[in-house]
Length: 532
Image (cartoon, rainbow, N blue to C red; front, side):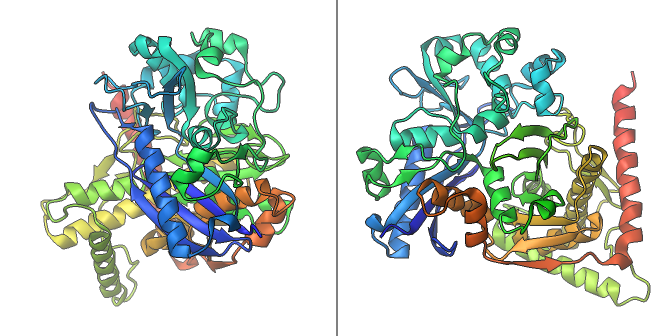
């Protein structure tokens, strides 16, 4: 009987695979690295063949660890970053790189080479952009495609396929060029709530009137939970599975995590007051609603990007975990930001705060004179400003390890303040959130979990299945593979429970003051930029 599921998550630096049973229990997990190339500032590239090989290796290793037979696997699902893959008419890699290296056929999601193109598309004011928060980010696919057409006309002329990375993986797995509703709606300005979904006048306005042909794009998308097909014999062999395994439509990684984190919410009403925070290299805030609620700087609303009959909206920080890594790397007392070094810093912060707490009336802030804006890679939400930069106020000549810890602590505070800034903006567009469901790598950082609750004033919910991204992908695979009739049923059946952290109300006034300072720094940064 086929009752196991395989979920594959492609992140920025690694491919991960998880093996689940039909109850949502994670049986085994494996990880394999992915290379990233950065030939120029703001340019980041992958090899899609390297990604596929890493995914296959991770699946084989996870299957071995789980100790299950291939014939027990019902379905496989893929999620990935919103990176762009270029292939020619024969399906071979096409260079996207200024180096001309043909193996570098993928523009990584965090690549910001297309800032100018994003601004030009945003300036058109086309109605399509209303469903992307009123402006386009260089992290979306249309600006990247526009950049490619201008700067790599040789590759454009030879193109037969452009894929969102998750769709590339299902193509490699099945040979089908069908595309997921999730990817095209969220990253390609496809309007799933309209027929046709592609806006011809928008494509012409963008100078991409030949995109449908060059990219091999279909008129229709595959609804999340429907099967794309089954594994091809070649893919089955590479993955260590068999050709009867069903392949689910691909997912944007953050949306897989949002579904995995929120799937156990018991009612549509609670879904409306719950929001997912997927914290990793960057952070994403994802919410579902039964009615569209457009808002500037919020990506979406996207119709049925995951759940049937629901709109999805996303806000986010372009640098979160990446900011903490950067702080560790740039400080003289830091170094390579390993898990062990992060752990030592977090432990020492706990000691410093405990010493301060021992003093009567201490607020627990070990660096009250330090203030940070976390926009070191631009501001995705709520300012929609890829040119925004980070700000640190209050630096001294302290080069000690404790000095690094104080800077790290305030960087964590700034990340949480940035999330509060996003939530406040969403409230202005009609969203009301009582619970923040946190998943991703940030669940392993106790400082961030504490701060998300205390700074935002909201209950933080952490799924017992820590890896909600893989779980959400497995849930979608379970529906595609016929183990459950729909996404809501799969979510309820496979949810592994949760634990909660309530905000410490005694710290509310302290963080309210920090937030006022945070907003003042945003204003002052704009004043400085405006000076001639």
